[in-house]
Image (cartoon, rainbow, N blue to C red; front, side, top):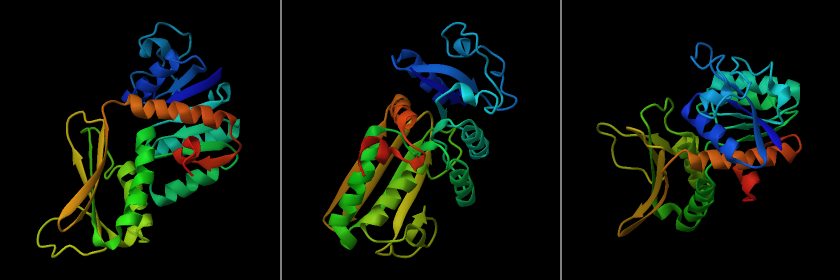
Length: 267
């Protein structure tokens, strides 16, 4: 059995991960954390997940319990993930990270801190979405500069960062296929007299409404036709199942920084 700790276990993603771990035959939930001030702190993990008493409490800090696990799964916030990365490195415990919204300097700091351990980090753990990353890059390469590229992403109204990490990864895939630097050609939404669309720009647009789990569309268009590549998530299970697949990978991997391309053998 692979022993797993879930950070942010009281949240929607944390609950989904925990319940899928309970259902698995090869994973064991041995701990969980929550942010300071959370009403879940101190509660029994099993009761938090609607499974009955486990005799393990929800902790405020990972550092004190990290050594009990083989893998820590973290879908929290940048500042919390930075601290958790240090805790995992000190304990020699692998990580699976789905936190998005890190600034470049935060990501660089995190990568430095987790160098001694296996760490899988991805903006999206859906298997199908990771196939889409590959398809978008190939489509961009084949279609070339004659086709405009526009991305639209939709998420629930609780999401705090925009555009989503997955949308940025899709935009990077398209830019790679077109031999462009995304930082030079990305246009985030449009308003007012913006002028005619340039040939090289890649449009990225974020929508927030209701309880949308995740919807991403990449449109390639030219006069006379267009093609859309789309991923639609109907529940968080798609992401959680992929994260557990990554946890199994991380538990047996050597030290290194990986993504879902490594987990799925897409590289």
